[in-house]
Length: 301
Image: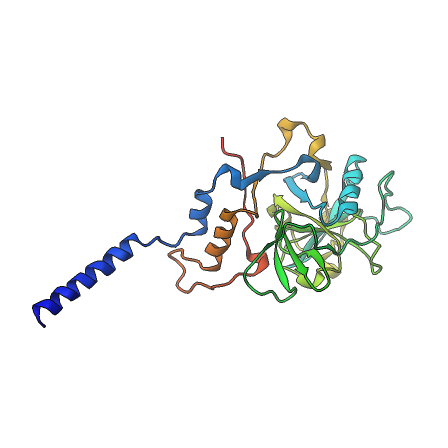
């Protein structure tokens, strides 16, 4: 090799090494969150937050009035008349849902709301217009487009002009019988298994658990049909359900949620689409709606 060729090769290798050293390293999800700013986070609205109190601790539920305004208003009314106090978790179906309500089987003896409604018209979908919809880049099996609205996993269809919430892990819905308008919030469920997206647009989703989901997901599975508890002693008593706005400020659970309309959230999605953590060898290059991380944290001191 001539001196000229050798010099050229050495210069090329040096330039390549320098470029590799200066090129930005792909960020992990942890890197993205560590670099977030206070403006990337939001606090919970106490009027749209519900506390489900169990002997094992508190489950914090954020309500979604943009998608189910009548059901959300009814949940507030039920909580404010202490409807759920003393009722129970009656069902824990493996890889599916946990459900709570009145365990009384006799319809004539079931607890009746005093002022709240027992049933409401279904709120399966809503007009897509007017929503601040943050789309994900990858296709979805169940909807033409998926993404997030105010932190809630959602889908929309431009042809029909409708949008709806998606049955991801932690989402809360109103149980119903066969008629679409037979639910109202007196019986609620939370998704604790693989996302049952086939339920989308078939049940009214009205919120999501943002803290304490482990208190529900670890419950023993029911042995009865659909995971219902067959014996009264298997049920988990509900101490009380309260709207956070009605709880003294000092007794509320302080939480901040990552806003989904920020560059930080977009970077977080990309970091999870293409995992660059040292453990990963083959990045997926795509992500499914219900696998998107929705971070919550205690406010920094």
